[in-house]
Length: 376
Image (cartoon, rainbow, N blue to C red):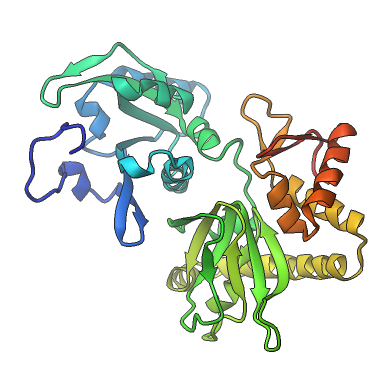
């Protein structure tokens, strides 16, 4: 706001309106350490309507949604508005930050039962909103008090969620476990998530995208011992939810990685609120034990070819449908990352991927693997 002089000078550097005091208003803030670098606000429809309603008359659109729901015998629509969106200039080339803010917005919307999104988009960013799936409801409107032309826009909750998560969102016991954890951690390749010196562990992590290396310190050697490589959809660090022990392993990002964070206090609050939550936790833990057992067999006894095939299969399970070709699924990970994950030298793992591509099983680019078949 300050950068483009949309608001008047404010010595307190605070921008607020009446919606910030409403119970159905959620301010999402992204931090780099202690420094805020991005923000977005989600407001759920209520007695005061939505911030977008002050810029444009959405009543006709609201009535259309209500009539459509009634004609199909569906629940009445619930609208929401995302706004106050801003990212520090130094971070605007980080697409993962941009998308993470909207992922959290979608998490809130899904939990609250939102069906449709309305907003007023700055004419200068109209193309961006169109790429996200929003459509214009009318012509641009000039707002002289902020010297900006705005365009009223709308989309369904399903459409914005599909854009934010790169395709239709899949739900599992793990995503149910993290469904109300409104914290994403975006880390670059090589970033340490935690280590054995962490004596006050209180967070578990779910990999949204990317890969994490789990290692253990050795007493006789200078280098760590590789225990496992985890990819999207896998949980780690969860033992701290149940005990007061220090970490026994190290966790490090292999590539740029998005993590959902589950804090210990939030976990136990949810358990105390809903006893069935613990059943979900136990089911997750049971499945992880099975996966660990299978992974251990692969590490100990599989041939190099079998090991490569196993990790390619694991990646296939985490691949997301492509927006324009939903019958194909993609993982944003190139040959180098696959080599690290499988623990096989780059030339050998690359040759394996190229054989799979020649056989028509996958598509291969420098930064992605496309799967043409469903995961087994």
